[in-house]
Image 1 (cartoon, rainbow over the protein chains, first blue to last red):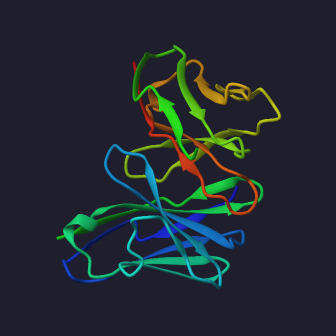
Image 2: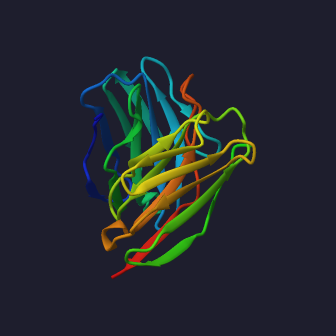
Length: 114
Length: 113
């Protein structure tokens, strides 16, 4: 089946620094990828829709200058958390849509800002 | 219109029993209804999905029942096992046009050995 690789799985960074998370579709092309945030014991909250070759579409309340999304190719989308603060600590998950399996999720990135 | 309501919030089932999780949606434009299983620290994994042109889909011990008129669908896990203990999310989306997936709140299932 379709595989979405997300890297890194865990990252600890200092407050004020930036962190980049990568999401790759390994065996299919994804013109659209999605970025979610999940707090402990809660559901997935869609942050933004990443569109290959164009600007991302952000959900209401999500700061686009803080969460930079780049979808430069049909297999790679990146989420950069800029000037991270402890309240940005969360589990970030990407997903991509392939025609056969529907939406496939990455394994997630646990971000801890200290 | 965008919501997907999921219940129960948590569920404890004896090994070998049937686990039932229910979801309801509002937007009739949805045409793809997946269920995801998520273990702690991992991303959700697609378990089974259904489209509204069928009323039931079965894959192994997992069955989705779909009631289009009531706008409800449910997941049944037969012969529940301790390894099934996880959080389950129902979702709804439109399969064309890159429509985003709307998730239910999740159900934490614990299967007692």
